[in-house]
Amino acid sequence: MDQLVRLVDLAADEGLDVLVDGVQGHLSSFDFYPEWTRSWHHRNVFTDPEAIEAQAVLLRTLGGALAGRPNLIGLQLGNELNNLVEHNPVTVTQVDHYLDTLLAAAREGLGAPGGLVTHSAYDAAWYGDDHPFTPEASARKGDVTTVHPWVFSGDCARRYGPRSPQVQHLAEYGTELAKAYAVDPVRPVWVQETGAPEPHIPAADAPEFARETVLNVSGCTNMWGVTWWCSHDVDRSLADFPELEYTLGLFGSGGRPKPIAESLAATITELRAEPWTPQQRETALVLDCAPSTRSTSGPGGTYFETWMDLRKQGARPAVVLAERASDETYLASRGIKELLRTP
Image 1 (spheres, one colour):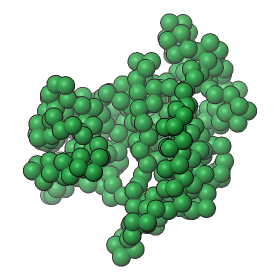
Image 2: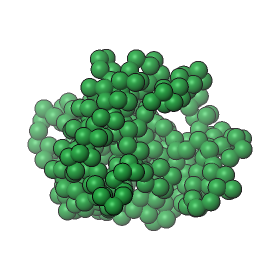
Image 3: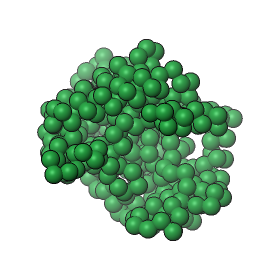
Image 4: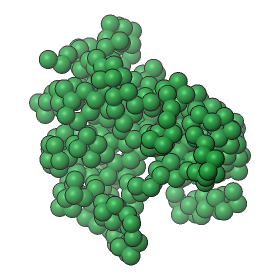
């Protein structure tokens, strides 16, 4: 804890804000577990009562140690925890209990006024049929919805091409999809992870991809922010990383900015000089899918392609769940006046 607090304070000295993850989950293509859950007495991190309580103790302790730090954004339960379901079978109900328990522990640790308390999942939560981490959990639990719209999800970049509208509007689409599942019509959405992984996005296309991604997302209402993954390339002397990790950074492993960094910096400067004011989206495409057909909203799915076709034609469609399509009060709260449906 002392080392972590020191690290957060060093970040403050450099003008950096920090969100601290409790259980790391997934990072640079490796899954991280509490080591005692991996021994001969394996514990399911999502369902074992003692494992859940241990994680709750960790989050309360983290919150107490970091509370009051001026550069602390808040606590996140862990990064893309749903990567761990393969070795920790869990049901939707058990995931909900897990998230509720740990979010409460994080809030207790931070105290008042505290900071953001949230969680994150990779795209299977949005696109994966019957995946136990649901869109509802992502969009309704915690203080902000986080989305990780990677271009390799659903083979998006390879399916449509690295310069395609489907790729350049993917983060915008993910943001609008997340807003549809929220109960609160003004709940903020954080594009927490997006990036330009080779070979999905060739290096020559990365600067334009970064610019278009940020500009398109900035046209969404209720945007909390965008964070880019990642800062630096992994040095080639470090073995056993997937190939894309070696070139995923904004900076080379030696610290020099790459063209994508320069493009991103210029785009941010432009937006700060003349902020792009988002306009309410008056037209929405109705999404009618059950947990077992969630993939229709992912790349290659009928709903995804219909939304993208509308976007290519110049429309700026919102997303509305079929179950809310007749709720006039809800539609009015989002400024929606026209509903469209997939063929």
